[in-house]
Image 1 (cartoon, rainbow, N blue to C red):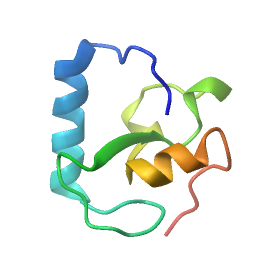
Image 2 (cartoon, helix red, strand yellow; image 1 turned 60 degrees about the vertical axis):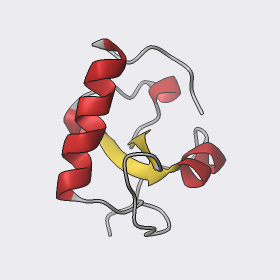
Image 3 (cartoon, rainbow, N blue to C red; image 1 turned 90 degrees about the horizontal axis):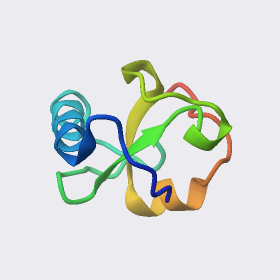
Length: 78
């Protein structure tokens, strides 16, 4: 998992994660039900490959899926 500083700091990152959980509380890869403790912010186009922090480039994933993906493929439409 990437250890960069999220724009706006940790408070903004928590706020984004919470708001995303209200809309779609499932991992984009395995479909596992997520909660605040298990959800990580996933970049559709990885940050290391030039993907930004815009809402359109963010989704949620469980920590194992986010870590295993690394800088792999983009998220496929479900």
